[in-house]
Amino acid sequence: MAQQPVQYTYNPPPQELPFYDALFQQADKSKSGYLSGQTAVEFLSSSKLPMDLLKTIWSMADQPPSNILDKPKFYVAVRLIQLFQNGKRPNDAQLHLGEGVVVRPPYFDGINLQQIQQQHVAQPPQMQPSPTIQPQQVASPQLSPMQPAMQRQP
Image (tube, rainbow, N blue to C red):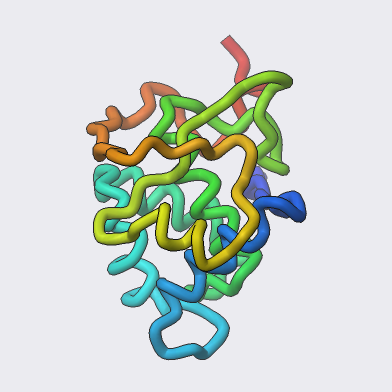
């Protein structure tokens, strides 16, 4: 019997929610309340992660599969992008970081994080951008990112 994929969720804390909502507004150019596959690919590929990894992120975020990203699925995709850009893997299905772990904000080419932060007062505490965030080549993970790191068997 095939194992069901993990259904990831990410509920940004109140101080992060305006940041995630602002990113969603940037991505949802049609103002439909969801991102079609093509729209999502355009936005998420600006993260500069390898296309194979972005396909995996799409599969992880689009659960149950619908071929669209609504806000909750978009939050998952952005959080996964942030984790992978920082060389991290999901620790659990809620995409929490370990206690005291600080990561850079997600990078999206053409998206000015400082402008978003000025438009939306709250800034995520784990996302402390420097004025010049540079894209980083992130190697595809050696292990399958489909399974949280804590559950992997040697």
